Structure formats: structure tokens, C-alpha cells
Length: 394
Image 1 (cartoon, rainbow, N blue to C red):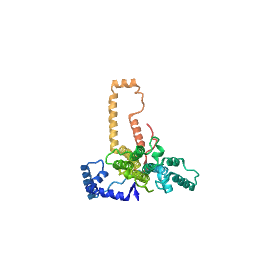
Image 2 (cartoon, rainbow, N blue to C red):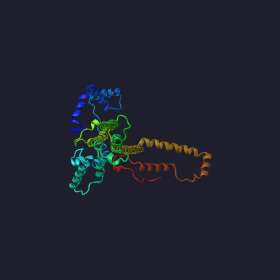
Image 3 (cartoon, rainbow, N blue to C red):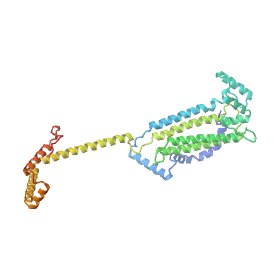
Image 4 (cartoon, helix red, strand yellow):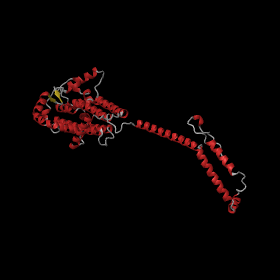
């Protein structure tokens, strides 16, 4: 039984050797976990947050409900998962591994491997072996090449044109650099997708900002771990002694990487979906409340206009007010009569053509009263007592 190119006994030996270091680091596990949870905060900020959280729990305050961006984020996640699954099905090394398909060991002769592979494809209904498999078998003609293939996969052998064949002078360094470049591109693509998924994380104290930092640190850590592991398996010959068919490091790493990428996509999606909002209203709810407030303001304005009209009508029908208005007009008439008796006013009226008017003052006053009675009837709150829509003009 082997895992990542190492047998179970080797893993037990490494754990026994590393046990003192692991035991000595138990006191730092809590600090590491706090750093993973809050990578952008200092120790004092973490303590303040813990104190605030404990106070909130003691008071029993309720947290605001979460705003879920289901549509956009879910569609984007679905597209990414579909692309990831298509890539997994197309580049899965288990589906094209000649040693797994034929159940042969790494030290099997090339002729036996080719014959077994042809027999396998004929059983699958294919008359000829695929061209890529023929190229791969021709390049896997030495044990060093097969060991390197079990560690790095088929991509360096099929896609690298400048890689030298494994030998004592070139012990797989070219193939390793080619694989690390492709590996770095894959993890850079993962960081890009996580960044797009958590768009808008520039603001402080947001859940997506914290999770983007966590996923970024974890992505870089896993990339460094995988790069170091591949470098050790390629450069240290003592680790390349396993000869059983289960030793396929690249297959295990590919499955691990695919599952990890899908998990990171889901974590980034959930960080955005479950993020608590700043306010409890969605944009549609804000628009609805705004329209309701506008309708209420318009209703209050109409009611105020109606009340003003009723007050004015009541004022016009008030006897005391009408008496004062009559006294005012009588006073104005007396003053006008006194002014008209002077010679200068008479000459001015003759000049303006006002002396030929036949309407008397009391007639004008009576016409004004009639107009007021028609325009401003008795005040009433019923609909039947509404004013006439077409009032008579003077």
C-alpha cells in the first residue's frame, strides 16, 4: 500500500521522526488557527473582537439575517464547476495510464506493454491504438522514464519538446520544470477564479474579504507543498524505489487537486452568499419603500390642499369677516369719492377715459359678493358639496 509515492512503512517512519516537532508545536496550533480565521488582523484586534463577541452573546443580541446573492454567484459557480468537470474528464491521467489500463508493473518490457495495450483497446471496440498512447509508449522505454512518468504524469512527455530524456546527466529536471510551470498556471487560475467569485472584497470587515485571504494563503501553501513533494520524488533516487503498480503519484495528486479546487470554489461561493448585509433591505425593498413614502407624501399634500380650500371657504362665509370686508370697501369708496372731488383727479380720469363709466360702486360691490358666493360655497366635508369645476368669471 502506497500513498503519494511512499509506502505505509515510510510514512510511519517519518511520523515517528517528526513526532517531537509535532508535539512541540501543539501550543502554537491555537495561534495558527486564529491566523487562518483572521489573517488580516493583529493580536490586539483579535482580542477586542473576542471580547465584543462575548459581550454580544451575553446580551443575547440577534445577528442580522444574511443576504443571499443566489442568482449571479450560483450561475458563475455552475459555469466554473462545469468547466472544471470537463477538464477533469479530459485530462484525468487514470483514463490514459497504460500501466493501470493493462494492470502491468513499471518494469514490464515495452513490447509486452504495447501488446497488452492493443488488446485492451480492441476489447473496447477500437481497431488501432490512439496516437498519443503510441508516442507515450515509445518515450517510456527506460525504467527512469517510467519512474518519472509515475511522478509527473504524461504531460511532460507529450507536450514538452525541449525536455531531455531522463539519464544520469539529465535526471528529469527539464520534465520537473515543465510540470511546475503548468502547476503554477493551474493554481494561478484558481486564485483568479476565487478573486472573481469574491468581487467587492475591498471593504473592511466583510466575510468575502476574510475568506479570500484564507483561500489565497491555503492555495499558496498547497502549491508549495505539491512543488516540494514533486521535487523530492524526482531528485532523490532513494524515494523512487517502489516498483508496484500502485505507485502513481501524479494520479493521486491530480485527484487531490481536483477535489481541492472544487472545495475552494464552493467556499468562495458560500462566503459571498452567506455574507451579512450592511442594511437589512434589498434594492427591490428599498425601491418599494421609496415609492410608498412618495405616495404617502402626495396623499398628505392633497389632504393639505383640501383643508386649505375648506378653511378659505369657511373664512369667506364668516359673517364677521364679510362685515369687515364691507366696511373696508365702504371706506375705500369714501376715500375714492373724496379724491374724485378734487380737480386734479377729475382731469386725470378724463385723460384716462374713466369718467364715462356707468357702473356705480355699490353695483360693483354686489357683483363681487355674488362671485364670492358662487366660487366659495358653504364648507362641507362630503363629496356632494364640492365646488363647481367651472366657476363663473367676473
